[in-house]
Length: 535
Image (cartoon, rainbow, N blue to C red; front, side, top):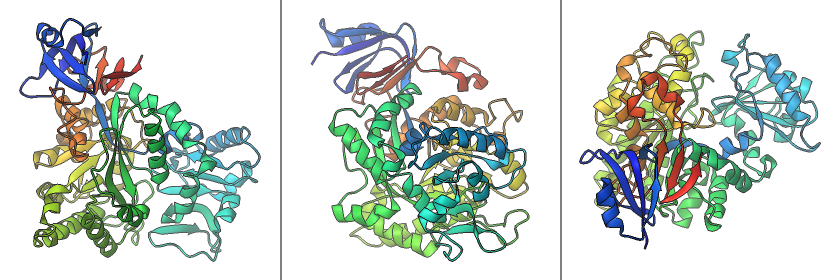
């Protein structure tokens, strides 16, 4: 097989044994040699193809360990309420978008953040009915844990004054007991289900059209946290030879029984499409006042958040999934939710370790916590001792600065504590949680290194002792993501035998000021030795 020499580059391999190189020989999907130019050319032979990278900087392909790709690509074709500064501005955008839709179409989209409106109040169905009276409208908030719907949508979803709150959810009601149009956590599941159907468009076509945006940002692999419809779409793209990046696909908890019946297990699949852990929600989000906290929310003495999956049920699901060879990825944001998850994982390890028939699962399965935002300080070391992967999204820390400074001030918490977790020996895998945040991994790298908002505030960063250096941030977006998908032998470093997944940048991240990391751009993205995107 004829090889390709990628040369005239500044290559950061992330391999401690040989951290820098100027050329790389690739054959097929694999790296054959990394080193100086003469070494790689000699290995390649006379017929090798040569690609001059013109002095650019090469990094291993970046891995987003928590991304909702179906919601992301669909959202690009729906009404986007991010950046609105008032309810009126949001309604204007909604009305403008509604005018473009077919008469029988649902209005979908959202990503509104009422905390950033000039009057930070929750919107209602009456507000939405003013600009969208006839068609159903479903508009999740920026964190995805609160859903704003109109009267037509409530009617289509079968929600009225007599509908009870579901377990793990809340239908917000007015003084007369009528739904206001705000659905929290599990109460919004039926509305979210609509956004996973053909009413939201052709997902295969949407992925085909918009996945290049992820390649352009430097992503060569993603861990997708969306539903079975998204998996089916990826399977279609893969079968057609149209899958441009690697996908580690998690399992929604609602599909656990189906997946067990099919005999799927975490790690099944191949280098392009593999099966991940089962995603289980244990709480909500801080902005929606639904993440599960030890102390109640300020001014809400009876509100500790929502246990979307109660502790006893979560322990049952962990045992059920693990018994079938499926790891668990638990959504946990509040300190009480994280403590509950860690207790369940510890109990599972203890019971499984005492059973010779399943003790091997303790060593093989890599359970995760998605977000891991607010921990009791004592739980930092516990997470590391249990070998749990902390799947974290650095831009959540900086986006949440106004919220956390107001809502969590004075509490004894380790918040967005990636430095503390790393120092304790935990694996920390970084991602974006797109479309909640922008999927650009350099936004996340900037947040991890500076812990500052894009404008440089606060000076020195929030909780500056939790900052990491650039090399560590890159490893959290490469090696750690590979470990979380059981592929550390294939991805995360640029060394012989590894997959040829890498990116080239005009600017060397190691040569810029931390504040400039957010502005870095990618010129070339290679997956499996093939240029999949080029600026």
